[in-house]
Image 1: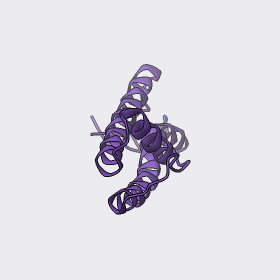
Image 2 (image 1 turned 180 degrees about the vertical axis):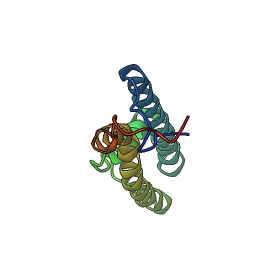
Image 3 (image 1 turned 30 degrees about the vertical axis):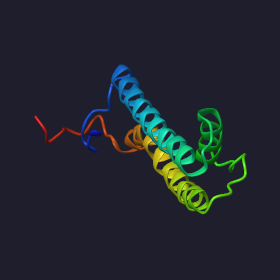
Length: 121
């Protein structure tokens, strides 16, 4: 999905880099949207929250802040704990997806040798 140039390949142009970064941002936003929707559905089904309360609690957990409304049912407690664990892992993965193009561009600049002939045609 995300193909990066090899060590001996010329770095991307600024426009191509911006498009690569935009693709990463869109991917991250889509994943966050799906994760938020899953959290909202989970809170609605397990705790009976309104859509607004479900959104508030899911977004707060996904953002790392913790729930707002008290969780009272057993199913809700299991869901909230599982969703919190999922959210912590999702945060790390999403940060990697978002910053990978930037880190790659910086590191590629250190390794690319413009004077060396490329073995690729």
